[in-house]
Length: 342
Length: 277
Image (cartoon, rainbow over all chains, first blue to last red; front, top):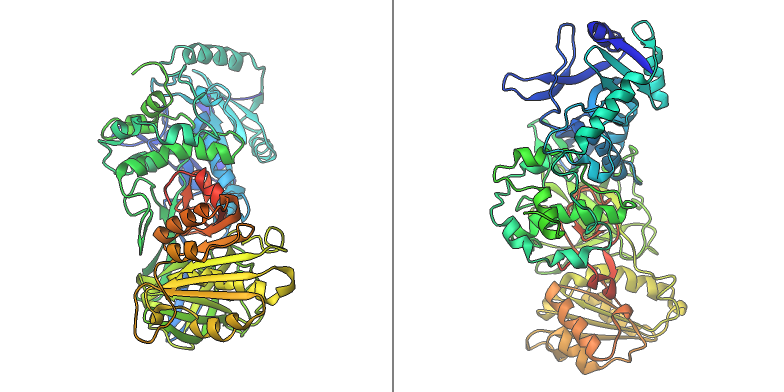
């Protein structure tokens, strides 16, 4: 275990930023926190988590894929990919760290998505244990430990110090070059914090939400549930849940004519949108109920069926906080899966 | 085949021939800018074609893999990309990437079997690839029956090839039908499903079915009524696609992605999917 006094944390950040761009949660004027680039004097937010997940670093909301130059009947394809600078995403919570496993299985599976893979190769994740999990948190039901966050480096913050433990080759290389600000220490303080986090986790209201009814092979059991009608009836199809979700990865590919060539870009899309599946000859999901059902069936049944039982939700709770009609995956799991309560 | 190491980045292709097949279907011959076939494929696989600034869409490759010189795409005019393609001239460059999808099991399941191909309208396009593949390797397969129906005689795709080549092959029988009687037509009149029932095929054949969803539904019912098992019947699905490799999420139905796990499915496999295709 390595340690840095909190009085010294800005020096630690400065050391990291010497060789890599450093991004960490920063407070916004509106009271929310977002990941932003650190520079001298920028304060590290104390917020439990950021409004948007850090998936943008690897799967940006919009991203140019290529350009085309066209002249008469001729077309030229222009590669716009540039090598990313090395970067460190600091203070990623255990749920969001797990979301990268979910995204990796999509983007890094054959054929590998070079745009995503390149950013993953250049990014280092420093996670952070949660000392104050919220009522909306339910990472525990997916086997994620808020006190044991994964990542290239795991971190724990106590009242007076930041503790770091490297988990991967990239993480070991990072802490090795920070030795002037880090000192070796025992695990005692971190172990004490883990115990106190475990106590809070045991009191969280959603800790007993059951995943038993879900997983691969449950399509026929759950698809025809009568509960989808009532659950989806007020859905606005706004897509907020998708955009704040750390694991949602559906995307669109579009062309933009700049007047001086064409840019083909991809951007986040949502299976909750009415045009998502619209074709020239029809649409296979005409109602909001069908689109709503698709999003949850994908996270709770289809994704685990294709990915060794791994669920497509990490329990971050963002959709619980952000949905304008207060609909969310917890209500879906309770009603579709016959969980107790509600 | 892609020139820059990512499947989303296409190669440049050139349209070298445009054949007017029906009032709303044209067949485009495509090669790379240096005159070669863009990539190898298997029968039933697809390719993404695009016109920069207009869009990109998935099309079945209608030419057989045994054609080593070029690819052909039979495309019906019914959306932005297809309307643009229909006004394109020979020499027009487009972009192409692929091949995508799981092909027909021509080398294992189909080998040695009597084959029954049933198509409606532009649904012949994906079947032409597998039909011509099986005709090329004629001794690997048993008898071949082809049932093909369209709205009118003018709407029959590949009509000359069917009449002049397919119908003359030994062991190949062609059964054409059109929806309504017309003066210059002395063949069968009626919809494909009822024609299939009328023809009454032996149930030891392996059937391949492609066409509009409603035609597939009723033809499958007709085959089942004749005593076919759904495990003997293959079909293809078509959903909106963007990436072609099971990542963008668009063609996801149940745990399957039509672009990657399909477009070819065995009809009993479809029963396990939610009815969202």
